[in-house]
Length: 595
Image (cartoon, rainbow, N blue to C red):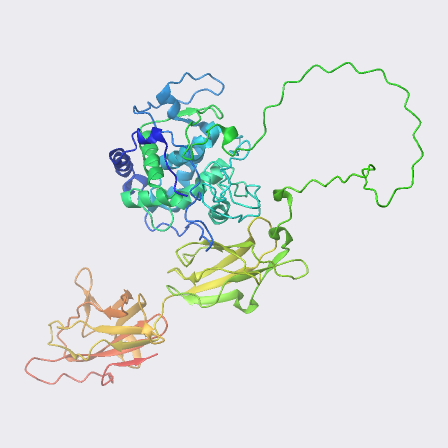
């Protein structure tokens, strides 16, 4: 649904100008240099959404619309736990409970290492946490960061909200009919299934844990190649979380406010928001929150009555087959089982199986797509297939291979045959082996693993890029640079490594000690070049060649990874037409290629 602000926001400071100030402040302090000199971040992208995933993280669920005050908070030292805190309006708005703030900062640190190019500031997580759950309801979390009671948005049944039918069988939200946003960062279950992260290293991803939720939100905002120090990427990331311009402006206001300072307060003592985008009361009791309530005050027990002698029990009578167990002829219906206690399809899965065992190992060249499919079938104990459950595929190992879209994790729903097929697997530039593991989302069962290998880029054929004859006078330089084209199975072989050597003879590939040469950094003759690479069109253009004073016919041999070889003839002769001295070698009469 499209969320709307109430009158308070329309009269507040959520103007374009304020939003622009927020972006400017964020960009100025989050330039790439601000997070260190990390380059080429590792490929630890967020999970790939399944085709049925919602268009944003929260399903456009309602949120708190309270604006920050007009004056900025002054940062203060952390109060001693249990010490009363005297707070004014600005201080209350700038409060962040200690554990919640730690979760935001820990998530920022993790993203700084895993995706330094994203430049995620913890203030952005704090701003989203403020509008989504009032900083986990003022920091009502336990020592591990798990909220005391679940934080739930309204059911997304299309009645004033988006229509998102149940995707988790009630596992997260306790609702087997419709989804509800869950946890302090208000992910909907279908998004959490692929975006969830373990932020507190306890071995599980819990949407109700502020460390897990904050890290998941950070990775969600840093998807793809976003750089949040850039205005466009920052706005795009926020809108991907909740696709509303009002939401965007509100979050930017809180980012700007938090950047000027915050107050750390004890858990459970943070201020609570008072306005919501759906105009319902913002008190936790009316916001879909569930959890333990305060115990009632005990009353003084009544004085027990004096026991009386029990009556002699009547002998049992033969039951009437037509009379219900109640004994009075009335029918007492059995109370229905709550939706979240009913068995789900996930509960019936016993194991995951290969769809094609022969595809358990596959190989692809660097930069190319794997041809085989990575898939798994969900089966019961007796081998029956289980449709409509989610299987998570995870790329593990020292590799930069990804699924289509640049992700390293993908959660996919099984089809009518119980099969989930991962997105196409794309090899990176790093050669070596890695694994793709499979797991059932929501329950631990035995999975299957795939082994994949990446080989270096290769060419199986080299050919001259033109029909030029390469000639030079003694002591001069060759006018034309040698250029060749590499292919692999008839297609362009781009970024393939090559070596160029001036050899003694066709049958003697040793480096020549006379004749044409390349120039090194110190202008000294170099007759072997390594580390050359073809360009995106498969072309390899060699540096300029020079000749010493000895006339003759010489050979230049170019080889590539994959075994392609091409020998090019070079002629050094006087300008007056005097024939070049015969070289002892028996050169190729013309450029040739062998593989």
